Amino acid sequence: MSLPSFFQKLHKPSPGALIACAFAGLEAGFLYTLFSTPNFLNLGKSIENVSVGLFLLFFALVAAGLCIPYVLTGLDLIPAAGLFGMSLFYACVLAYRADESAFLMLGIALVIALVVRWCLAGDKLKLDRLAEKFKDYRIVWGIAAALFVIFTVAVAYTTSRKYATFSNFTFDFGIFAQMFENMAKTGLPVTTLERSVELSHFAVHFSPIYYLALPGYFLFRSPYYLFWVQAAVAGASIFPVVAICKKLGQSPLFCTCAALVTFAYPALSNACFYDFHENKFLTVCLLWMLYFILSEKVVPTFVFAALTLSVKEDAALYVFAVALWMVCTRKGMKNKTVGAGLFAFALGYFFFATQMIRVSGGEIMMSRLSDYLLPGEDGFGAVAKNVVLDFSKFLATIFTSERIAFVIWMTGCVLFAPFFGEGLNLILLSPMLVINLMQSWTYQYDINYQYSYGVAALVLVCAVLALVRMKAETRKFILTVSVCLCLIFTCNLTVKKMGIYNRRYRTYRETYTQMEEVLKRIPRDASVTATGSLCPHLYDVKDLHTLPDYYGDHQYTDYYILDTRYTGGGYDASDVVSEGHYVLIESAGYIEVYIFITLYTPPEEGT
Image (cartoon, rainbow, N blue to C red; front, side):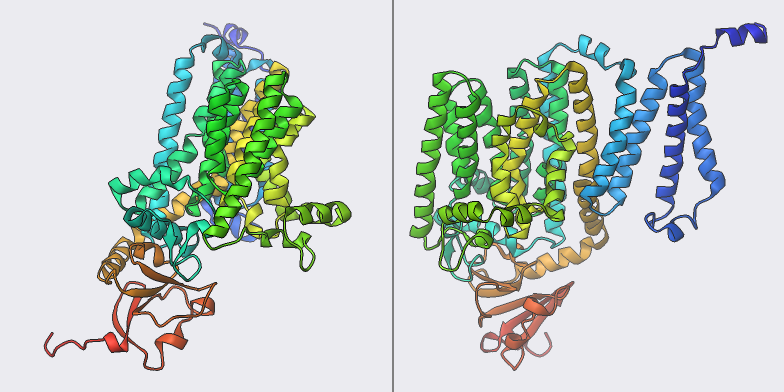
């Protein structure tokens, strides 16, 4: 073949495709820079170890590796897949390496959205062809099951590694580890850690749903079981999301993308690392309740409403929102009647749950809304009155950088789709205002804690309800970007934590093993005060107290067990263990064990 005829067979390249190949090459160079230095955000530190020659080499290899086959074949898939793959990989690595930042994720989201927009124009990624061939919902359920297993194993394994490295604390794991052990022994959710005295957890939060997890605890009888339970419960949210999408008549490819979004949705995996909580049950219960509402099945709707309410007394707020949404948006008298019934059911249960808290010896927590209460006031009625009378205060509280960041974490990863649906669907998001954004308790609007699980279900459903009413091209764009962004956001939040605890365990495994052996020798019938990082490992000690102690003074217990990694402040027990009251009897790793002097038996000579 002559050279002119060879060039005649070459396809005329599109300028956009060539730019895409070049941009993918640039991203290869960016990745080289990221992997070359731990200080990539410091210009002076980041480029001092970077070779310009190597940067250009990576650029040229990737750009040419995409350009040459594209020019030879004319397949738009080559530059599109190359650009899409490199952009997603670079964004995930950048997110993993960067500090936690919702606003950085927002910037990355903009770039990814532009990349996806170009790749989908003209169906360069061949998603339309894939959708035509992908018609079997059985494959969707198989994918959902695989994603569930991957989620459960990955999250449970790495959160277990966190426990093995003594990185959990009394709040919020030690109290539940001790509570489940006491439930197994007596049937009652009693702890001595939560309020410094022997008290039912139901005096703090009324959460009978814990009894659903108790049978499995009898089988495994270990705190590790709790990590697997919460991972499985969070991961199981994939199934009702797929069921909702199928019920709304969406294609198998749509359902699969929705399963991927749920699998990677950052709020579901991230807060499993802090640490165990009843709120983890909210997402799956709410999603199944909404599925049965859309299916117009009354009995299962109320069954899952009851399960949702049994999570916690304030779960009634989620059911209130769903009931109001039903009344305002669902057609037919049956739906409106069910909505009214749900509202009445939730209201009645709320009063029952608050009364049970009082019977158990506690009071409902209104302190987290204290910013909206005048001296001497109490109750949600007073809060509502003051919000109306001083609405400026309400706005000033909601619109802060920390709370806006929370909204970005929750909705930005689905490209803010919930806000583009029918206006009345936003009723479903109203609990985010009350439970997260209005609260003065900072953890309520922190993505790293458990207060995002109820809202997560409502965000996912609102996003689906918005998407099904959009044009096909818009729907495809938002779904594709959402899958990418959920992966990227999760790399910034969850995957980083997974790496930290796995490396920590591998590096100091022998030390942690020694610490466990020391704690096993502590008599379980003794009274013990321990640093908060040790309390989860002493879960089967009946009379156990924590340092720092937020609810009482240091007590003269039989043992004081200190973690030397934590000193000063509330961790300081020198006022008790000094002055001749206690004797150091053992130390290993980071642990020091002190015994009350009257219980001390000096070792015999020669031993």
